[in-house]
Length: 624
Image (cartoon, rainbow, N blue to C red):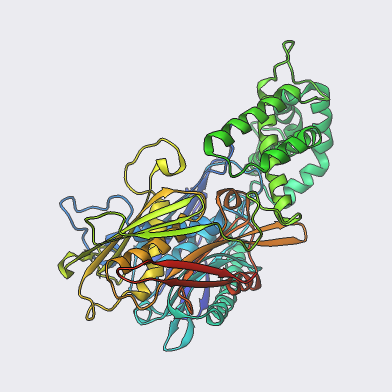
């Protein structure tokens, strides 16, 4: 292995001075960055497979955070004295990295990518979660993987009434806001926030401050990539250039020989035409050029074929698929049966202007697979057009309309408190249990927190969506939703001196069709009041969505499952009548402008009321 001098770039953002270094550690990874801030150090690595797995229909991205206790000079507790499965903090950090990174890849990229952030050192002043996000983005930027970043991440605190960018962690103990924001130079891509008493105007100022810091970090990563980056396997420009050169040849081969012939055309004709042959005199550059040609032409071929098949399906069966989209509120089995019937109808009746059927009329394997993908793509496009252009949601609601809400307390007779919250086809039962202060949760990780007196757990059993499956402990999603609900409610929990109890909340998702995490916030407010906990204010939560089609942008209130799956944004907001207590933003776009988030925030008004013995009620007013 050739040894070269390490490359280093530094950037100062707020109270954190970050340094990115490569060329010294983990040199066999596709990209490796040793990121430091003060005495905190994280090794971010990225590795990707050069070829996609056959038949893969999604992007297999995996993010892992390895919190090593030696980083803080600690020995792990327990009998085994070594780290086991990822703790809650590491799991939440991994989710925060996955969410802003996942949308920034070429459409159709299906190669395995594995990113690992190993926490090597913590000084308890500079946060390792922020450093890990930036380290992994930087590792992807210098790798040959076609990541269309960078993304930057910052933390914003509200300390003694002043917004501060990347404050030292001990100062965050007295902060009224813990806001983590990720984004690109153009827009915000991820938000994760807990807050005490923060109004909408302050939150928007915090987002704007965060984005200024994000821009500086992204510029540093771009400089870093210009100094130490490897040529990318493919890029948006390369895909566009190859599309211009070879799309017509792919279409001609499709019409002449059918979809089954395209794989051979790409491997045997197009790749040799686009890249030099490999022989005993080939160089590393020749190998890289051939790899780029193989990957890029594979994506181009997939896009051309899907477009051709989707055009056929839309032309011949668009009206039938539009009628199918009007039955979103059918039961799960009925919807599945109708979709299967529609797919079979298309497979049997689609008129192909090219070879693709055998003598018995059945589709060959490649053509059948593309027909299924085209049905899904066409159905998605139809639903999105209905929402964004025709202003018609799948279940017939208007943009601002919330599904019917019902609440109930005292559902289980022997527990301390219970709240049942139902919104449309989403239903969550939250149980409150009170214990002595000796039953607090001890924290054994790399954070400053040592114990917790308010604990919130969220469960999502397969039956809540009418499915079978294994129940082997909480998944990453369950941990993330529980943490979000906990952040939303902690600000209204009474101080330990006023209410000396450990409180454990468990939210059981009984039905799910959109935003069960926000339903758990609402159900938990009911359970806390039913248990007689003197919360300072009731808390409610709701999820907003966004559909962007061309120049038309539609903000949706109370999104359900299909709108979450097909939409471009999942923006969850929890708060009291006056203040925001928690935010979470996920987007499938390259970013969301801060003013759009402001529009969504300004459209919400929560009201929750109830007594220990009497009827409880919840209302959400939307001002869109």
